[in-house]
Image (cartoon, rainbow, N blue to C red):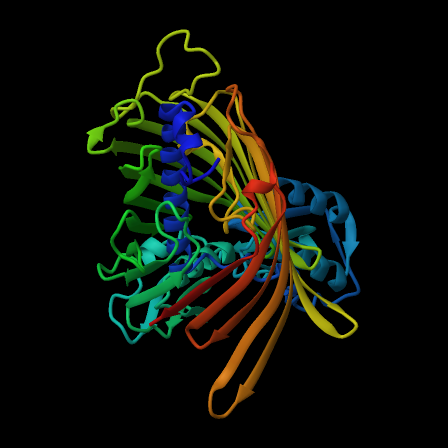
Length: 563
């Protein structure tokens, strides 16, 4: 529906319901803009890119057995024998016990054991043949588990890295390469870090010193941006600034404050502002987060009488969450996550508090995230269930609430998918990306829980027109032509020209609530120089419910810089 009242028709047609839905859409748009500002300012986790263990070749040494072969009736594993999987013990015993084994057979046994260790990430665990008399018919194999002796942090800034919080493994634990890669990912999630690993021999056999070499920079960063992606209802132009603080407590923690404010003009009848605070604490394979945000808006409505009324609103949102990586290898990463959120929304019209459109919702989001490298690109996805709860002062649904009325104790499923890749056609490098977002709800939802289509974050080509639905999806597709030029005077200037096509559809259970489909096309250019970025694009609606909602060609601009 329209995100601004442009005439008396909308004000007269069930004004309370229309105003309530508009308020909820405005709240969702503010939440989305603030989240996007935060995501652009914060360094995202790198895509999967761990060491390919298949490239690590096992090196084994077998002593001279003095003859062509030795009769072996029994094979015994000693030392850290529990590192050898039971199936591998059975296979080795079946294939080699009761035979006359040559030196090449012994090498094959040790190679199979070492490869098993490496495949599971235990790259410093080894098997060897101790001094023994093979004439007894018994082959002894000693396993020495590779362990972490200690961590050494080589960094000019004291306290920039807390290894116990970043790495899952502690000194004395088995050395697993995937644990070390997880720790490096956690360390490098802070923009001031650029760490890499160096494994060095320890003081005892099987011991390894894990050296972390980090070229850290100043731990305080500022990211600023301007865009004209807002709506007429709450201000088209906006400026945003994010300050991030990296590990000032020495716990690898991240603290960020974001402020988004409508500008040009900064006052008047259509304005908005949002403030967000984000705290993040990594601990091995887990990451814990706490977020708070407050959003405010003012939207002046024109009445048929010629008078105006100011609609204002404020939303406070608290959330706590946890993510845990449950699987990773050189190409993939899978994590589970849970987040508890409470939203307290208050709205006023002409200075009068609107009880009917003011409410508190509490909900739990539980999901699975996945990244993987495949087919020359990177896939990412998230499947989640969101359940409304009657906790923390949340609105309670009355018994036998009709299905066509919004539910506070709702249930819905969300799915987000993405794919990005580079490819070449006729010697020209191109990029392609596609993104899908959808949700299916078992209940009628309040507007803040509905999916929105129409706008720079969903279906481009629309700015003041948005459709919201209990169920729906949108898909964004983009083809880009990257380029760069370098000069001694200016350094490297990179950019890309891109074209996009987006489409989406939403449906609602409640009668009389707008549903339908939108699609739009985009042509844009992005420029990147040092820490400055410019994104300028033109977009136009291709499909809309009616011609009155076509806004012509929209020219949009986003500027950003960081220090």
